[in-house]
Image (cartoon, rainbow, N blue to C red; front, side, top):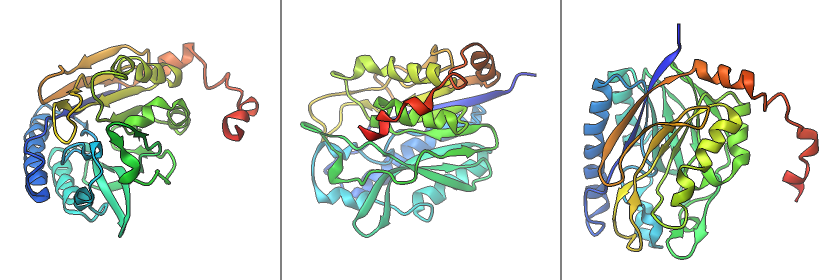
Length: 289
């Protein structure tokens, strides 16, 4: 009998002006997401991922200390506690990306992973932190991740997480495969222009190279403080053959749902024996150069 898992991705536009108080923005964005989470639950989604820094704007487009007020502790902050309730309600695994405070002044771009009974399984901290002028001033806000590339054994599948800019680095994507990931989620915030053509190229390539499913999430719409581009959505699932099997549009908030046949992983790996044929002893230059 095929091992089918129903996956879901939420892409969402900003719901409040960035001039509003931080608490107002967070409350509004969480409420907007809760409606889509409810929709996912009613459609039987078993594993759901939200977009990068889901409860606010992509504030890294400017360098202002006011955005430090977006931070929360994991797993003891109010947002994760709330999402645990919804995970339990719908028996749904959830990947919840938030701005994490480890201690005063030490912050990370992080995704918490919750099991289908609401149990907090752990977190992934974004490793690769861009600092690109204009508009990607992430080193002002985040320390590089320091928890490795964990894979989480959830009720329905082995889940890995990569976040946004991480997707440009194949090394971590390979480690997730070697650690047993069956589905890798990449919550993102990326705008039309320089890297859009890579959106449907790099991650399907990771899926092929490592023989797993990928769920890629992007924001949608134009939002301040980012005033030089538009988030183009196009969130999607692709299978281990690199084929996109479900995809959102580019101009509205929506839920993407796909049934993922995890048996395809073994089918693909039985043909393309990339893990068997690796030569790690010859890759020393990757870490020494």
